[in-house]
Image 1 (cartoon, rainbow, N blue to C red):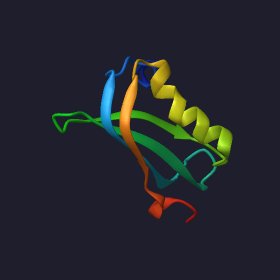
Image 2: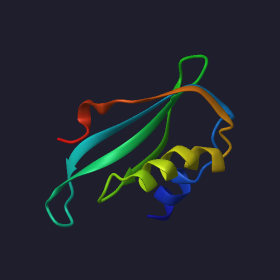
Image 3: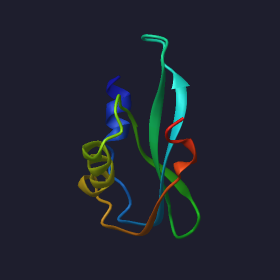
Image 4: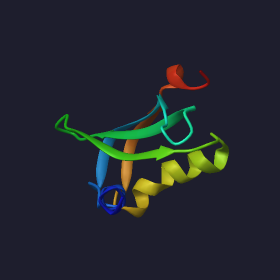
Length: 92
């Protein structure tokens, strides 16, 4: 668990021209229910992709999204030229 927290809090690049936010539906062993794992993926200018963060949340509310959008800034990402939320996975 400490390794996962260290990864989640690692420093990020200062700039990602594009950041994607999406969700995967996975069965969690803890209680056998299907939950969403939310991901943020940043694309660097050279095309390299970095997973910026992942979150497992019970609810997908405004506070969650505000925190998810702001977390990369606390880890050094100063700017992205555009962000995209892919809605195809949400609400299923």
